[in-house]
Amino acid sequence: MVDIFDEVDEELRADKAHAVLKQYGGLILAAAFAVVLGVAGWQGWQWWQARQDQAAAGRFLAAMRIADNLSPTPGLAAPDNAATAEKRAQALTGFASVAADGPAGYQALSRLREAGLKADAGDLPAAVSIWNQVAGDGSVDPLLRDLANLLAVMRQVDTGDVAQLAARLKPMAEASNPWHALAQEQLALLDIRQGHVETAKETLNRLSKDTAAPIGVRNRAGAMLARLGGAAGAVGG
Image (tube, rainbow, N blue to C red; front, side, top):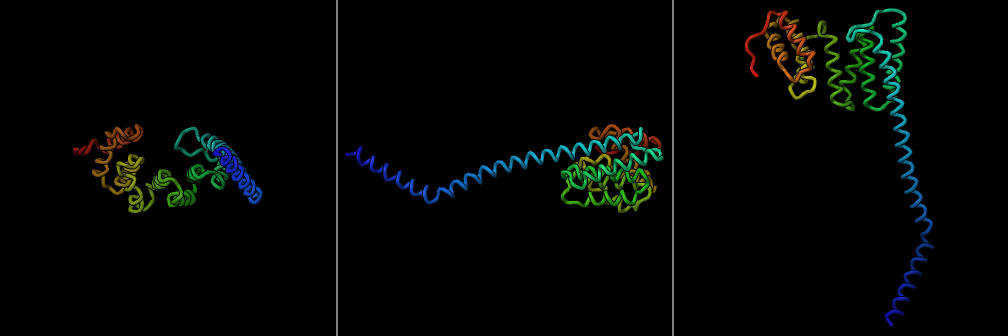
C-alpha cells in the first residue's frame, strides 16, 4: 500500500510540474535565455573594453616615444625648428586623442604630458591651465593630482606668486606624501627666491640626509647647500 501511495504522489507531482511548465514554460525559457545572453554580453563587453584599453595604451606609448625623442637631454626643451615642431604636433595629437577617449588613468597621464610639451614649446599659460584642470579633477587619482600641482609649481617657481605656489606645495611636503621630497625642494627654492637663505639651508640639509628621498633630490640638495655656503645649523631628526 505504501508503494502505491508513493507512486500516486509522484504522478500528482509530475502532473503539477507539467501544468506549471505548460503555463510558465515560455517565461522560464525566456529567463534562462536572458541569463545566458547577459553572461555573453558581459564577457563581450569585457573583451571590447580590453581591446579599447590596449588600443589606448598603444596610442599613448606611441606619443610618448615621439615626445621622448624630441630632446636628447631629459628636462631640457628641444631645439626650436620645423622638424621638432612637426614631431611635437604629432605627440600632442596622440596625447589629445588618448585624453579624449582613453581609460581614466591614461587620460590623466596624457593631459600631464600634453601640458609638459606645451610648456617646452613656450606656451606656459596653456600648460598651467591643463595642470590646474588635472589637479582639480576629483575623478583623477590623488597621486596624479598632486603630480599636476607639483609640475605646475616647478614651471613657475621663478616667476609665479610665491604665496600661491607655497600653498600648493605645503600639503605635498608632508612626510606621508609620495612627492614630499620634490615638494620640499621647491619650497627651498621659493625661500631662496625670497631671500630666506637660512630657512632654505635647513630644508636642503634635511633633504640631503633623507634616505627616503630620491638620490637625484639628495644630490641636488647637497649641491645647492654647498653653493649657499655649506650646511645650516643642526637640524633635528
